[in-house]
Structures are given as structure tokens and as C-alpha cells.
View 1 (cartoon, helix red, strand yellow):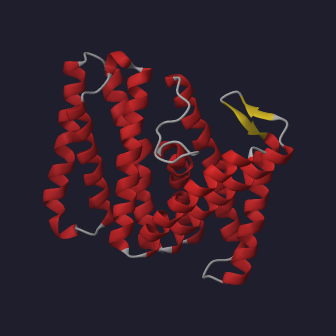
View 2: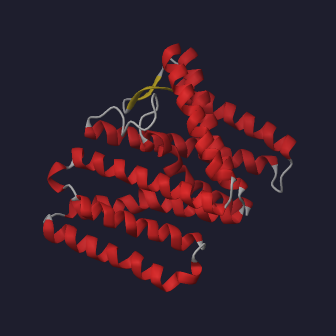
Length: 270
């Protein structure tokens, strides 16, 4: 257990949690601002990683900004907060997508630039859209998904630090099977205890099922981002949080877990 690193991570996490809770709990406008900020920061770091991985096919800044505008437009459109401007927003959304795809193919003479830019929508923007949709289902869903991810990450880190011996994968050498399995099990127990005392409109088993989906898919999200960093030959995607890295490092689990959580909630809970 590296105690100086632990306390550095803890201090950053306290500030981070305060900002997240403000966005999650205030109102729909603060939540929209939060998910939009997450998307912008993650996409910014994503393009930086792509520049290192595919330097020949790097997107110029103006294309990145236009892509951000298009993806944010989708987010606003599906949030239904500005539905009275539906036609204008739809035009703002669609035009940059067609222009950017054509520009990528004509300027770079390659499918890579168009491909990884198009992928950024599914990897970064779609999860935020689905998170907004879950917020409209029940404001408790996004909050619980994020808390489940935090719980799983923290408990896996603690269990792995104390008893972890068996490496999980070469992609992320510090992760262990003991920490991963221990984090999942303790997360399920924590959610079951919370659901027992909270007594929501959903059963304990439904919440435990959601926790299992989030914990497993969130771990894969972490590994996916670790793979991108290895391909880019960087330790962190950014330096937003001391001890935690950048926005992608912090939200990698959420990006992959959200679509699966949305499917589970739509089929089982809502």
C-alpha cells in the first residue's frame, strides 16, 4: 500500500466528488452542464491520444471543434430540454457530421481520420446521451451508476493493494484478479445493503443486477482506455486530477458501463 499516493488520490477525489454531486443533484440544467463538460473534456483527450496513435491522420483543431459542436448538439437534442428548437438543433447537428466526414476523406485521403472521429460519437457522446435519458427515467439512475462505479473502483483498488497477487491482464499490469473480483463482490454487497434500507420502487435483486452489470462493464471500460494509452505510449490521458490522470482516466468506466446499464434498466427495471 503506497500511502502518499493514496492520500493524493483521496484529496483529488474529494474535490472531484463535490463537483460531481453538485451537477448530479441540483437540477436538470446542472446535470446537462455536467455531462456536456464530461463529453468535451473526454473528447479533447481522446483526440490527443489519436494524434499519438495515428500522427499521419490527425484531425486539425477546427475539425475537432466542429465535431464537438455536432456531438454536443446530439446531447442537447436528446435531453429534450430545448425541444422547442428541435428543427434548428437538428440542422446544427447533422451538417457538421456530413461536412467532417467528407473533409476527413478529402483532406487526409484516409479512412482512419473519419473512422476514429466517427467512433468518438459512439465512445464518448452516445453514453452521455443515454445518461441524460436515464436521468429523465429517474434521477436516481445516473447517481447510482456513478456511485456503483466509484464503489467498485475504490474497493478493487483497496483489495488489490492489500492482497492482490495475480495480474489480471498485460494491458493493465497493476490490476489483479483478487482486486477485480473483490471489488465486484463488495460492490454487490454494498448495493444490496443500501437497497434494503432505502426501499425504492425497485427490488433489491434489480439493484444488485444493475450493480453487477455496471461493475463488470465498467472494468472493461477501464481496460479499453488502458489499451488506448498503451498504444499512444502515455501513462495518463491528461493531468486534470493529481493521482487520477485526465478526464478519460476518470470516466473510462462510465463511458462503457452506461450503454449496458441503459439496456438493463430499460429491459428489467423501467
